[in-house]
Length: 116
Image (cartoon, rainbow, N blue to C red; front, side, top):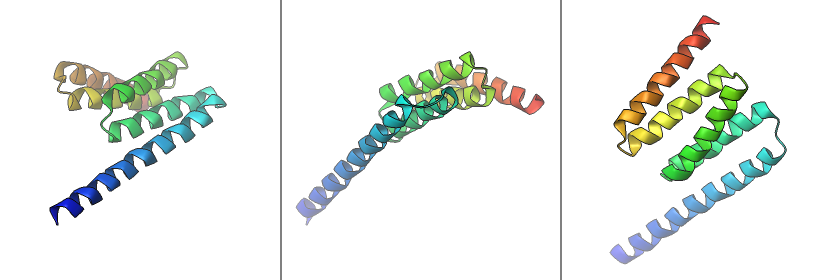
């Protein structure tokens, strides 16, 4: 019984990972031809896929790409979301000082969006 359960769980895990890679590939294809505003969102979406898979190294790379592009193009809302996501990666990897720093940065951006 245990052996069959192990095999089932293994196949389910492989399916989830394959599904995630398919989604990342689709998003990357969209990214190749996207406008700047869409690129900011696509970088964040790819980061979220990796985050959900607990692939924090790839996740944070895409979140930083989203943040840098958002800041360059003064998209305060997107910068807030990306900063918050970066904080979550740092939190999940037990880097609490960096998590707090990015959560504060996100809060600062969110407060700016409320004042506009």
